Picture 1 (tube, helix red, strand yellow):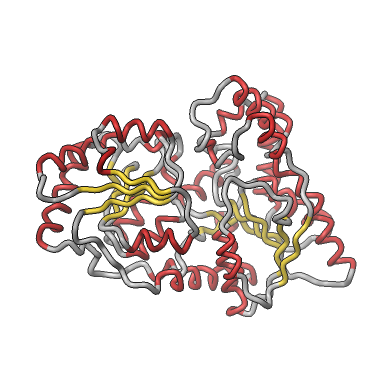
Picture 2: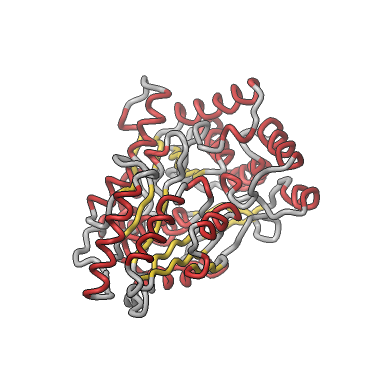
Length: 413
């Protein structure tokens, strides 16, 4: 959502007039909402909101649960009801349950075209990958130049197996994916590894068709000054995190480091969704008293929590094909100019980015020695000076404005 929002915010500066077609908020169903971001939509941008048809209200009534996060991060261990509903979702709603919006969105576009409006390009962003079928339909009907922005893999997403597809459903979903990759004029991806993943599926397609346009950070979000704490060394994580991220070894390293250096108060802060299983791991490590849990907050407040940290924690889920996972928040972490503890695979796109910007390196999931060594070095620095902010700034190329300029070039080429 922020990826598209920030593009829309900056496109006008590069001579691109955007029309946004999205869902009427009165009908949309999401796990969380951040109304504060609406203020970032420029006043001169036309936003058309449509009806939608989706099953999530029925899901909430059947299960008594909130709408699932991506990857079912807020569901915990699924019961029989959840497994049955995942089977229904994976086999009756292909590519996904948001597909009910497509006919409303297409009707809105057809109305604009019937009125004589002309567009140089259409951009569809996913997940939900059903959104790409809107671009596919417009390409077939009107021959519009089409940019398909795939923020995540499609049939290779790490939780795909949890949808219990039948062979027929898997075939149909893969067919949709192949049609989108083949017929889009340009495929935008967020990381080099994701580009390699899609190209391996269709090696006959030209490499130039796939453009890596990473996520980024908005400079205007980081106008406030950094305020690292002086009374503790605070390690902060923002966003959703579950046991799939395998930070248990890091938690043990934090506990060991705290015992070795009682004069340096080590504190953990999690802002956002934390799974029950991960909370259990924190308790098992003996860190519950040193840990603060803060529920979902608006984006501007989340940035404040980044700026009030000593060190930032992020993790790449320990799942197949995770070398290309490059979370959007890594760029905001870089903009906060703090050291970053990244639990994840060495040599991954995230690892390469952190080393490029001198902000840290990946700490492999089971490399306890490297984790403890890294923490010991931070403790030694903190003892000398509690402000651990990085001395160099090498991430400006990832500002949302710079990346939007690149999008405008791609759209015009």
